[in-house]
Length: 209
Image 1 (tube, rainbow, N blue to C red):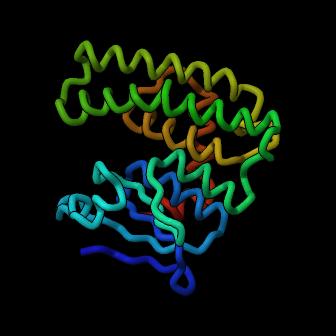
Image 2 (image 1 turned 90 degrees about the vertical axis):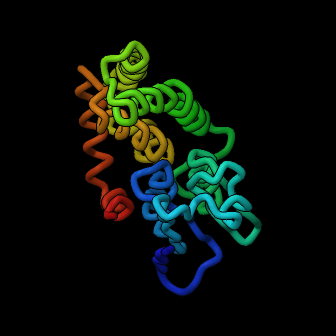
């Protein structure tokens, strides 16, 4: 069965969502923005992401998908960047140096950290081989990225000098996953940052299920 969560009257923005997946990122940002949206929770065990209807939203039957009056969008990082632009909040002006930092850290999280988290997750959780060559290599790469983030966060609370932004939704979301799997080592600044992300009321609302 598909669960519906309506915030206010029925809205044209709908998030197709599976708990504890990448779809937490856009839900977290929507909560940070205070934006009204409809949440459609899909049950993977019941095949609700593999329906023909969902294939029309995402060609690989994945989540998240954000459905708007103009059409559907997928890929979590793209969705959160678009949402920040649409609402004009939590993202610096186009052309500014800090806008460039948003792109920098978003791509860093999605290319230098998340792919290795995927491999580590597959080895540790699915194959139950956390000491395999692949797992150890992935863990090493995760910690290379973690050390870079740890150094960056040594003198600041959030990824941008100006404070919390959409960059933290992307970086914080991926870093949380890496740490949850036990892959992050010797990165106290990064761990404190993850705790700050978890403490945000919007994050807690987005992860309550």
